[in-house]
Image (cartoon, rainbow, N blue to C red; front, side, top):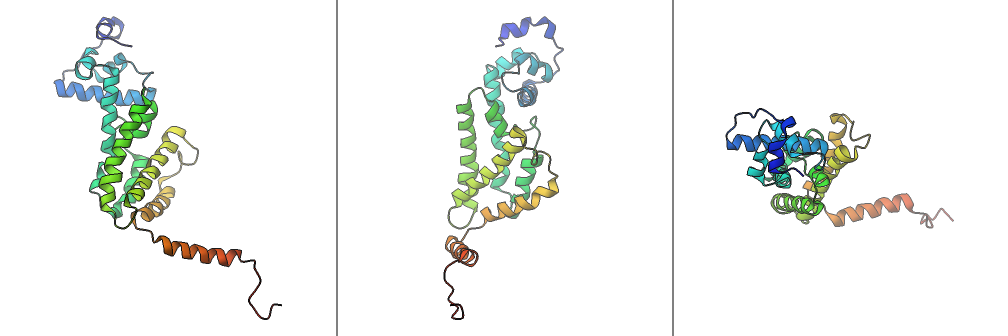
Length: 229
């Protein structure tokens, strides 16, 4: 693990610091850290790597964040900003927003992806807790209040599951279809699925329709036609 003294002694890694004020140095470190953590993970990233990419003295990591873990947490805490548009976006625009976020979201240097942050965290339990907190605040509470009809919280969390699941499959698992499919192919499916969650579902009516379909397709009982004997 890097220490402040080690950071100062690393002559081979010496850099010419860029001229930032304190806010600029902090922002540069967080941007560089987001990129390095995204590409190499927590264990594969050193404080000297981050400082070199940010163009600042490595000792500033300890001044502003206390440790590499503190810097990672600061980066991870920005992930909730991804979901903020759901609090004010018109509902009819939500399907396309979900699609853009899952398939063409901001780069890791802008806002870290919460799924990747959780997977790469040195403390999985803490990362899961942060993601749960973000999902609860934005989806289960604030977005659910915007939905009409029953089961609003359930529908809102299903939306979160759909979004995070697509992200996981594309960026972490990298399944062949979702990681390479053209945008135009996916959007109609995303729109259809999200629209179903935005509108209240008449469970009883759906059940009757399902029964009718099952009855038509699977009726193998005796015919009521008097001509059949």
